[in-house]
Picture 1 (cartoon, rainbow, N blue to C red):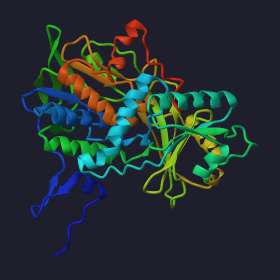
Picture 2: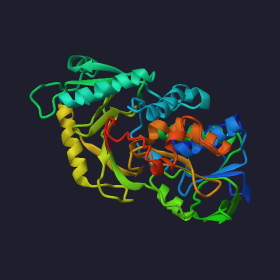
Picture 3: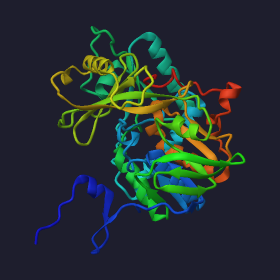
Picture 4: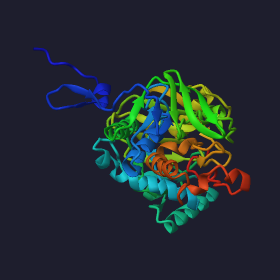
Length: 418
């Protein structure tokens, strides 16, 4: 008898169920007529929100609806970097909340998310940048966030393959180090959340695109989809890169732009790169995946677009910058590249908020910080949906800040400022 073969994808998406054969890891459902809550978007933040709604708030009659497949959007196109070394108190709070959840997430979900706390270096290339990064280290330490300063020699000791030659355009003068930072496996995180939420009763409805939002007397009453209408009193949009599209269906204009974000991977190598290196001045960052590929990223394209490829000029610039830091990469071959679509707010911080439409909630605008925040974002967003008010961590990220001017201006404080 010939044994049945399974692809890597099927092994992730299916779980062995005794001797009964293979069963889906999450319940692929058809929509019911009514749910207590509906979440638009089956990425990391959407699945995390569903999981915490069910686990911590007892809301199990909920549906996650996804126009593609679970984890097939931006969640599958990010560079998997995890860190929480942001400058301002508000950002440090939510990203470090996420960091604490990341540390035990694989055990909690009983799913291998391939979390690797290998450390994140943020490089300084001139005296001004060095002063700014040292300031960030001190701010992090005051907030209880893991952070320290390394001089150039210590950077070389931590990351042996980096060049610290003084005779280049951007010499490495030092770096911040967050030892608890690192990388994980993006699709495994999404599937782990989906499987755990499904086990608690959440429905996952794939290939189901939202076409409209039903509102009566200023309150959400349902959502129209390509699989029929669904009634609900709570509707949450978690659609990275397309938050403005879903908000417009409810008559809301968000202060958000959508831009392509460049990334690429090299051909696989044996392990040579033991950490994550990020550089603002040369605008590139790099780590190595468990498959051996170098995962390389840069900034967003300056133009507004929904294309998932981006401009080739950005790709050229990031590769040139990377080769100054790592000359040993010069003979590697590019395997594939892409552009994810990110929502960008004017202050480069997220929106986690109620809206003027009662029962409609928005989670978006994360820019390049979305993946790092995944568990923390889902956790506080679920709390907002369940209680109809933000907790202390989420409160700074409401839409009201654009009226009051109390912005979370993290734009220049990010390690790669987009």
